[in-house]
Amino acid sequence: MKIAILGGDGFVGWPTTLHLSAQGHEVHVVDNLSRRWIDTELGVQSLTPMDSIQERCRIWRETSGRTIHFHLLDLAEEYERLKAWLAQERPDAIVHLAEQRAAPYSMKTDRHKVYTVRNNTNGTHNLLAAMVETGIDAHLVHLGTMGVYGYSSVGAPIPEGYLDVSIETPTGPKEQEILYPTRPGSVYHMTKSLDQILFQFYAQNDGLRITDLHQGIVWGTHTTETRLHEQLVNRFDYDGDYGTVLNRFLIQAAIGYPLTVHGTGGQTRAFIHIQDSVRCIELALGDAPKAGDRVRIFNQMTETHRVRDLAEMVAKLTEAHVAYLPNPRKEAAENELVVKNEQFLELGLEPTTLAEGLLEEVVEVARRFAHRIDRSRVPAVSAWTRELGAKVDRDPEGKALRSAS
Ligand SMILES: NC(=O)c1ccc[n+]([C@@H]2O[C@H](COP(=O)([O-])OP(=O)(O)OC[C@H]3O[C@@H](n4cnc5c(N)ncnc54)[C@H](O)[C@@H]3O)[C@@H](O)[C@H]2O)c1
Image (tube, rainbow, N blue to C red; front, side):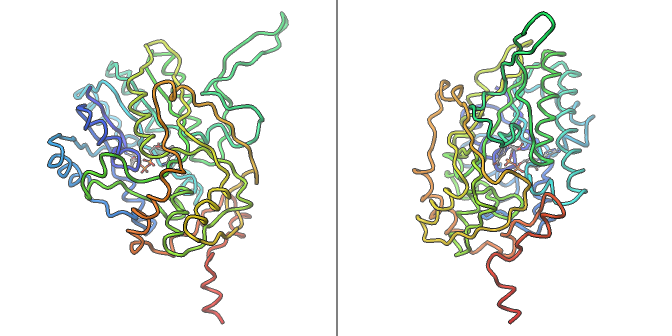
């Protein structure tokens, strides 16, 4: 298949690109490299030393003999170029990962809110409109998030995208299937909720074939292909905006920093290893809906954990110390989360569990590259409201206090 990977230079995109190329697909990365610019804006860098996308593609060609094509294009701002590119390349499948994906970054300031909405919502809509206009029949696989469901405890398992409801009408109750109601917890999650509506409309109006993957929080770094050469290494974000919770605990442990748990740590979240994330995208590509079908929705996660239990697990493994800090997010202090994920298991996913992969990550990645960490970028300081911002702990190590004495 000819596959376009939008956002193919990113954390999920790069290993997905390598994996699909290794399987013999013709892979085209489309990326505006905005994520690399955001690193510069925030004054951070990937824990792992990451080469330019062109260099990564060159190393892959030398290692595997296969070519990855790179196209510098902004999905949200360059509609005409995107349309011309699709008309010329006519991919069989499109994997859409090209969005601003950090909830804390999306809540940083009003400018970051505006940027996230413009980038994500325009990008997705531009893509859908261009697919219709060019008449290509590509299967679109989008990476959404479990966060669209919200994290309130409803007491029932979260289904894969759709909910059967019974509505009272004058002639009696009527059964209907609806998109599971969204309850986004940040501007970023809100854009993913909007994406869902865009997909529903274009599948119904134009017969676009769309799969939406509601992914959990990704942890881990390596996949089979990124291990093949040190310059193929995946990015690893550890800073307070982009670092995901478990990866942050791993680097905190590696540098003797307290494991920073926000609030009571009673938030239950869904997780998936990067290798499984890549495998799920491959499985979804192989199981496309037909034109006229409703949007196919999968829950792309393999296990759920409470944040404080994760911190305790990492602390036990590494003798790190856990620090409980004020929560910069506006969210329930404690929540239960039960999620259905049978569809991927039925398609053959064999999950990598935390219990098997965690120690290897600490040793192989976090400790190996610990010298690249800037401790001042570790605290999570983007707050959801002004009031919460006033309570944020910017110095979990207590360094400022010591120097003042
Ligand atoms: N990482 C996670 O834990 C996680 C969890 C759930 C869902 N997701 C979703 O998976 C997708 C990929 O996430 P990731 O962690 O790889 O993020 P990432 O930020 O590492 O990668 C996104 C890539 O998209 C590119 N991009 C952004 N806007 C673009 C635009 N307008 N035009 C062209 N390219 C653009 C960026 O430069 C970057 O290379 C995102 O949509 C994200 O919401 C990620």
